[in-house]
Length: 258
Image 1 (tube, one colour):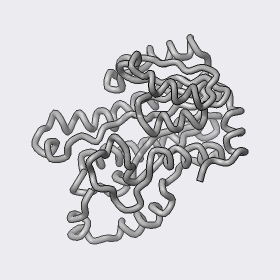
Image 2 (cartoon, helix red, strand yellow):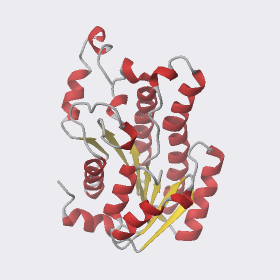
Image 3 (cartoon, one colour):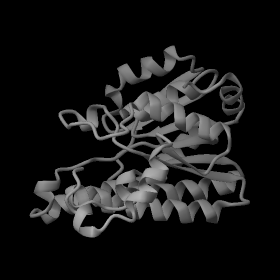
């Protein structure tokens, strides 16, 4: 179900630019398209000069302006300069969407320590670094929203994807704490917990039960933002399902697929 007109009107009345960190992400671009009408949208990613398709999609959705910015999530020491440059060029940030991340190769990560660390660095360390800097910036503004993508993979980590799952588990805990720390500051954080998402990132993999598409995740994100929620599961049915899965004996849990 698409976000209703009232939800979109509320979101589009929020001042400030929409910035998608990970501007090539299918989910990130779909969120930007829904928030685009009348707003300035910035797609931040590596190889920012190669985002023509994504820019056109957001512009066609009604954005007042669409810009790109060079952003490497793993280059932690560049994050602050990227934020400073964005604000100097385009004004305050209204909504920041952290849409970057990698699945990595679980089999390789079990014996290749460098690959395991690379997954955790992108999916946890870089997220912590950027969201902390964003929180500091938005607190100074007195307003703004941060969208962080956790995953049901982090709710209870499975043997089949424990490296990726452990990074998401850490991110989920960090983002939950940051959301509490931001309470009363005028800044809020939306924590998104999607299940298996059918898209480029999972191409070639068999979809898990209760799968969704990038479009469905984006719809849920925008509805949650419009209603001022602090977390959203996609689809919502996964919340009670994973409550039950927490109770499964470990001998059964370790045999579950990704």
